[in-house]
Amino acid sequence: MSRETEASQLEHSISKYLEWMVVTNHSSTTIEVRTKYMKYFCEWCAERSIEKLAEINRDLIERFQRTLYTYKKKNGKPLAAGSQYARLSALKMFFKYLVRQKVIEFSPASELQLPKLGKPLPKNIMSHEEVQSVMIQCDITKPRGLRDRAIMELFYSNGIRRFELAALTIYDIDFDKGNLMIQKGKGNKGRVVPIGETSLKWLDKYLNESRPKLHHKVDEITLFLSHKGEPLTEAYLSKHIGKYIREAGINKSGACHLFRHSIATLMLDNGADIRYIQEMLGHESIRSTQVYTRVSIKSLKNVHEKTHPSNQKPEENEAEAM
Figure 1 (tube, rainbow, N blue to C red):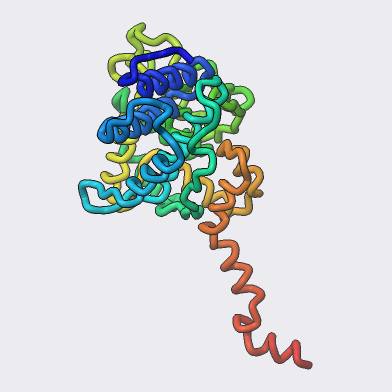
Figure 2: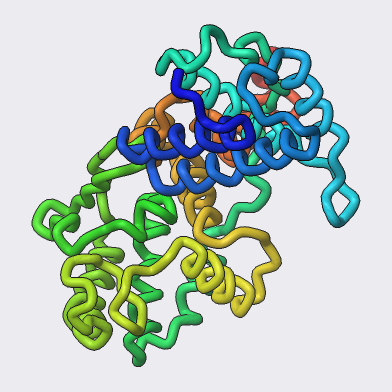
């Protein structure tokens, strides 16, 4: 192992790890999050004068885990189990990388017990009528208003993720087949998803009437552009879509992902097979999609009302008794 100065060894190793993530084509979002989590761990170690990798053992990792458990945010609330899990998982991946690169012989985090997580239900779902009330907030007489309508129609059409939409190019839409090619979804996995006729019409209108006014030769191929002709950021999308939801008088938290939760639940309510929903949303595991079956209770209630003995009319029960 090379001999960096003791004070910089941990920081240097983290830097190398993040470089490796870039080279191995991890998503920019994943790299951004890992950078933040590893910086926090590095600062925690520095406060305790821990500067060498050799000083980091299982006991220290468990101390760090207890710190996360007892940590209080500015509002006085503790870190959610999911936040603790994400930080500790990033740490495990970092030490696994060091072992693979033969920087250390074994990982001090290999036997770390991560917090158990349940599958939280989506907190908010919009009805079809509520979605339409959000859509009409857009001033489609203006280039950005028309763009925003096309964006929300696409969110509602197939539940595309925010970062996936931001990365779309004009060549990813197949108008003839009614398909959308998502080149790099979660985990850098691509997939093809359908686009509904309504969404296709708004996309066509945006490409012909709005995008030419936004395109200033800054970006030649990105589908959705800012007023400066640049790609939209994920933060901009969340803030902007959230504003339309509030303007529609809908008191439900969320923005772009709210469309994703809503369309998955509404399609299940209308009889869509869960495996179709899984493919459309880009879930690697069916377990990620099954959370929507716990939200989609409309079909279950219909079956219950039609078949439960207590819900049968008296004459029906008498007929059965004869």
